[in-house]
Length: 481
Image (cartoon, rainbow, N blue to C red; front, side, top):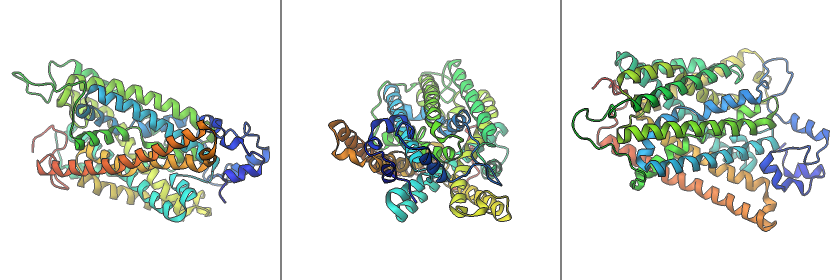
């Protein structure tokens, strides 16, 4: 049974359910005037129960949730942002980065508030069922799964690049990708997000330090490592660039996805001890991520211009590249693992929901979990070896998958729970219209971003930037051929 706005009205909260406070401060049921019994009712709808005889999932506090959110957002996407800044220009790219961060933060809060008003929703897929029934649930479920498989694939590419850089391309890149898949999958098999906490924290620190080293490294060079080392050269740094529609949309989709993973917050909220504390974690996470993105991307682009490497860890020369990739190994592994874990956890809950095997250490529980996780890793490996350029696989995931989940769905979630705003005060009607605009923005990014990315991939194949699928060629730029 769905605990909806009508259920709240049954508890005597007629006007308060549509009060702005619910949106800005979250589902504070005590402020809404609900009785203690209503709080118990909300808890009874949670997917994971407390104090069970089996696996205890509800163990995540808000500080640990912040770290997990950081790892979900501060991921391998940051390594492609300097390239996107080159396409848009320093000012255009910076404004795009700040604007998308603000929009994605707000949409994350919409999703979290909705989940807490409907605690039976473990993921955005459950929310889709609340909005549109079976068919919308299955459509969003497919998009959700493909999104996190694609992002897992980007993690596999990033790790294979690191192995190639550190080993001077000692093995065929396909073998490095296969080894990367095995390592990432092994980490993704950790069952609870609490136990993944140490992985995510180490991941954030290692990736942050690696990026810091590259940022400092590029400022110590007379010219970018990829630029001609003798004679005159053009840096390619501009305040405002004038890209083609395809290049601009591809860069926009790349920047958008760098902070659009809020749909992955929802399973984490379901494992929090106090799900209503999620907003603290979201705001702290997004503030840290934005400051890191701006400082890293702007500095690297200012010093490297059009000669920035992709991924960006190779922008300061071979020695710094090896040092940074060596430090970033933990981060690259955990980036892929957390995304693979989220995809596997979604399928796992779908298969075993309302079964004793969901939280019991039975053979069915273990076989299902391991089988799902390994299968998702295999699919991610195939996709990673089919689209081998890092920023394109991220842009494709951002436009075709994350835009519907991070922009379109939050708009509909808001309209669903605040339907009364359509005929309310002028301010409420304005909010209603603005959330329709949010849906339209999501549709624009989905359609145009997907088109632009596909055209970019096609052009890259034609001019040789992307090699054949399952190619042994070095993808780190360390060894030619």
